[in-house]
Image (cartoon, rainbow, N blue to C red; front, side):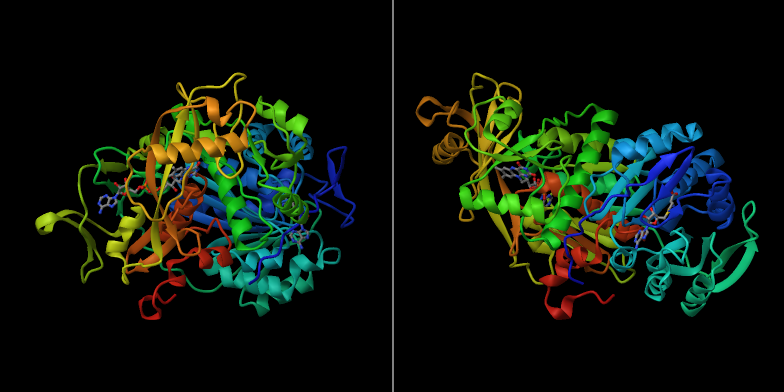
Length: 615
Ligand SMILES: Cc1cc2nc3c(=O)[nH]c(=O)nc-3n(C[C@H](O)[C@H](O)[C@H](O)COP(=O)(O)OP(=O)(O)OC[C@H]3O[C@@H](n4cnc5c(N)ncnc54)[C@H](O)[C@@H]3O)c2cc1C
Ligand SMILES: C[S@@+](CC[C@H](N)C(=O)[O-])C[C@H]1O[C@@H](n2cnc3c(N)ncnc32)[C@H](O)[C@@H]1O
């Protein structure tokens, strides 16, 4: 399916006397006789969740109509109060989401949910179309918000749902939320034995569900409503085997992110690297910038890039809170290379109607105030972007994964073999087995070519170098990017980079690349990094892995064999969502990205037809 820019028109609800009303649909969001009690009765009890999460290890719920998130908060709260150890993956689609500042007063009417409400507000994404994955309770609860038209967004969802909350406005006022096409999507997502609950027993709902293969019954409704609807998809779902142990080759940002995403789902991980510590190759960058990329290509690249950026920022905030890792959320200034580039950037922001909490156009004076150093041009300001030290990030992720994630350094993997029973074996020199597990992930950059079915000629190396500069006066407060970037001071230096060279594969720091970085930084901020007066004292170099189409490569490459490679020049912005997608796929959880995006990132796009995995 072709992805269009999903421009969001927000809720604009009216709120007074505890009544939340949508002028657009002419209906109330919740029962006037008790929003919480109705939600509990219809959706939570209606789907029998209390019993199901006591017995289960994980449950996936899909909701139509996120509204202000009351159903989600109540479900999360009920799970917490039950004391069950069950995982909750809650997916909710919403065409007209609330603005953050309109959501806060609405949620205040339920003080019982204030803790959870605060967490939701803190993680709430900007109003841009597409998928947004949020994590709570150290990852035991995920919320995937699909901002856009329900039918289209559900068609993009890859999930195996156990329960559905059908909560559009009344069918007579909101027919799109109860259409035959939407019920077909519900049926596609429903596992055998899954249940559906709705407050509406309208004929169109009953017939729609029956035609989609559900067995429908009416049950006692809430308060003055005589009836509510319950439906079930016949059959029972055999439980999906979850791997006990996954082996990962490569302990850079790709490998440590995968270890973290799996460990937070309770899966044991063995992380193997030829180096003796994590982040000793490309991910050892001492000063990497994490920012979204604004592009006129409104399809897969921008959907993926925005979902990835949001997820990375939320993860880095979490890692900062839980480990003290230094995520410098300074904001990032992007300057255009030339007037034509500026024009493209501005048109891309307008085309996608990106909200100011994501990006805003700033003039030279605002740019100067924001970054702290004189700038002569207009630019884009990304308030939630920032910069990191790659090694401490990888260490923080490894630390968070540690109870279930073991690191084994100093081991060169020479073969990855799958035996007849499907177990995967990592082998080092002299055919010695390093370890065996249920699955393996190749997260070793261009080194993955060795283990790919066709030798992966579509993966290439691109060496790069950053240069350490003496801090300028006045101090730079945020990274500034143009055809490269310069960071604020980290430890003793500002870092400027980066070179990109596909003809060299070494990671030695050299003069020629310093010169190129000095020219670059003189173009970015001539006011303080005048080429003639600046020296690079030292630097850092690494080798990126890039794919032929410059998108990352993540997915299945053989039986029980997966990869997460080709993170190019954006590994720190991309790895969190890629590893989340892989972990969700491996464990049968809902995907954090659109199916069209996942297809474009899959190794199948490059693999010879005969090597593809049939789905
Ligand atoms: C100069 C430069 C500047 C950059 N700037 C930015 C930036 O500002 N922002 C950003 O987001 N990204 C930036 N990047 C890109 C980013 O660094 C990469 O995308 C990212 O580090 C790739 O991570 P990775 O885990 O895939 O690879 P790596 O970090 O290279 O990890 C792969 C690991 O696999 C191990 N390995 C390989 N083969 C084997 C084997 N056979 N057995 C055992 N172990 C093996 C290696 O030792 C290595 O540790 C920059 C890159 C460079 C070079
Ligand atoms: C009754 S409210 C949902 C209340 C919500 N479940 C809660 O707990 O607060 C219905 C929601 O459906 C959304 N909606 C209406 N039409 C839609 C469509 N075509 N696609 C996606 N969402 C839609 C509305 O914007 C509204 O937020």
